[in-house]
Image (cartoon, rainbow, N blue to C red; front, side):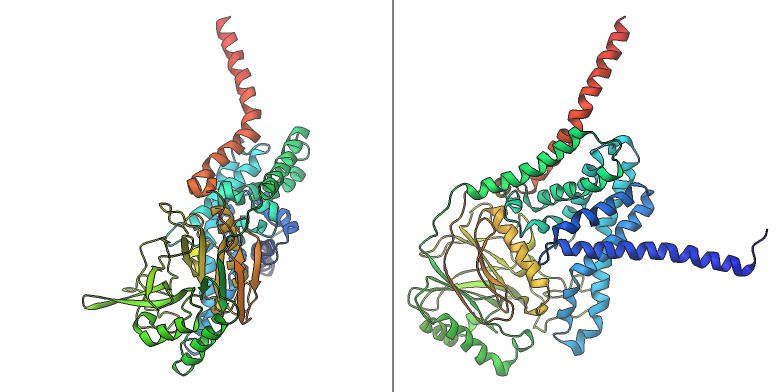
Length: 530
């Protein structure tokens, strides 16, 4: 029987709808995975989302696997960074129409990293390399490699790493002190895809494999709990005041509101008892403070005599015929004299500078005299009377292994930030989660001063000792938490990831394969000799 023209057209429509429906389902699966991350941290969803992707990819050819991984990544990033759109509405007349295209475009670009992971997994899964528990290991290895690349390619963007799903679970985040966030993500992804693997291969899985897996998960929890139990350090005798001025972003640089902004920070800083250190957020002072002697004197007269002020301020330096602009944190003594400073070295594309400005006809989201210039890199400040301090400005805190000076280890980290761009969205809470992971990785307390929140005091095990929520005005007064001894990750950085992956492959695959290969070798040798 021959098909009519109408039947052929109907068949083509069905053939088109089915792949589109499949792609939409994968995008939704990726978006659902965002709920495993802070501020939601619904771990129960992880085996369903990552597990479903793992099972789907196993049966696909490499190209289709890459497309599937890209669709998953599109949902993952669009759902996880949609809050970036809020920054475009701070100056809605100029940038409002670009909000959705910008978020969609960035999500589409970032989705190529899950696509790469899926492609490599599909290629290798077609061999015997993925048999047994090697399948989940292979998936976790590919996923982690893609996340590491995402954190390093071009300027890098290691936002919402898979391991951050464990931030809210105190014992489970502690292994980051040894293996970092990338290593923690590797273990997390491996463990959450195992249930799907066991269900899909229930006839081929040996009980020893299940026992080994459960023991591995229990040991991960036990190792983290042990780190929590080992020693309770006393806080230092250094008092710190973190000031959250809560100045709306659209008001921050208005000349007629400048006096109100400065007065607000002075009033909050000078109340109550005398602190040793006063911390203001990123660009808290709306101008070039080094150039305004009267304001420096006014600020320091209002502060207690024993205080050191550390504040975020823009800075500019003449360089020949040009002027260089920097986003900095500067420290001042009680007489308004500069004690040193730090210039941000990880700048936000299109927020603080326009990449490839010669070819890209785009404006920065922030009005200013010129693009910021990156600083030389992490630096430890030695200030009189207080422990050594490392500084990370704004999103510099999201980069594992790149927040402190390796040559001179600080005793604490000051994270000055301005998340007012993102309102009350989930963006500031995700940013806060990254700061907590840096504290665990480095074994250092992180003190976070944010213009509109979230300001916080985080100890060296990632616990939040005190915080001010979004759009609150106030101060945090606390003793500076102590530093822990240098962690394994602080010593070796991401190099700890390689032995971790190799050890897992040996544990779950090598112990099963090596005896078999050894028996085959001796059997072959025996036949040759006889």
